[in-house]
Length: 248
Image 1 (tube, rainbow, N blue to C red):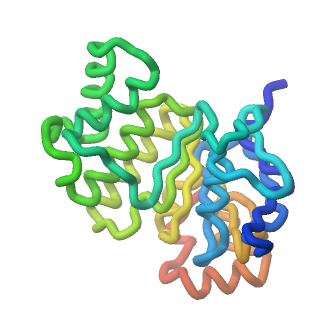
Image 2: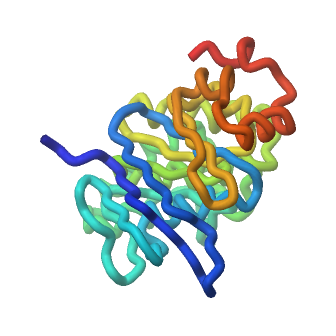
Image 3: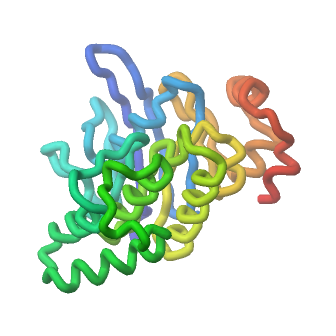
C-alpha cells in the first residue's frame, strides 16, 4: 500500500521556548485542494514551511510520500511552495520561468518550449519579454505560480495566493488553482478569504493558537463548525451565507 501524500505526526515548533505549533496531527491522502484557515498567528504559514521541509519541528515528524525531510532545511523533492509575496528575478518573464527548469538539467531548447507552453496556460504569453519586476500584482502571482508548477510538483503549497489582489486578478488566480488541481497536482493553501475557501477547497483545516482544532469537508465545516473557536471565527470573519456560497 502506498504511503499518504503528506503526514504531520505530533508536530511542535517552539522557537526560544515559545510554542507556536502544538502537536499538529494531519494525514492527507484524498482530495485535490485543502485549505488551512484560522486567525492571524494561528500557525498556518509555519505549518506550510514545516511541511515543505524549510523548518525542522522541535518535536514530531513530517513525511511526504513516506519520506522524511532532508536534515539541512532543504525542501522536499516533489513539492513547490509559493509565498504570499513571491520573489521574482531580474530579467524577463520568460527568464524567470526558464530558471525554474534549468535545475533539472534539461536542454535549453526543451526548457524554452516548456516555459512558453506554461506562459500560454497561465495567460502571460503576451508578456514573454516584459520585465518581471514591472508586472502587476496579479501578473506577478500568476508568474510565481507558473514557475512553481513548471517544476512538476506533486504537491503545490500556496500561502495567501490572492492577498491584496483586485477581484479580476483573484478570479484569474482561482481559475489557475482549479486547473492545477485538475491536472493531478494536489494543492495545500492558506487563505483569509473564506469565500475563496468555499469555492476552491475540498477540505478545511482550522488552526487556532498553534493547534489544529477542526478538520472536515468544506461544506460541513461552514454549515456546522464543532468547536467554539471555529464558531467564533466564522461569526467574526464570514459576511456571507455559507449555504449560498458553497454547494460542496
